[in-house]
Image (tube, rainbow, N blue to C red):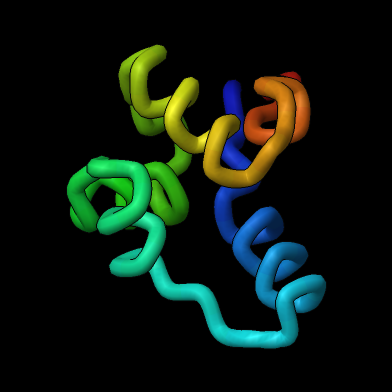
Length: 73
């Protein structure tokens, strides 16, 4: 199973920048619909596009390995 670490990355970025970062803000900057971001963050096994993964990696300044991880079932 692939697990996205979106919530963790949001928390880390918020801590570093010392401010609250919402999914709405990420949506505005990346162009990814807020509903899609919510599904990525909250639904196990959510299937998203490589474009969304690319945009999130660019936003957080991370690699795909930092955004998503494989968990054996």
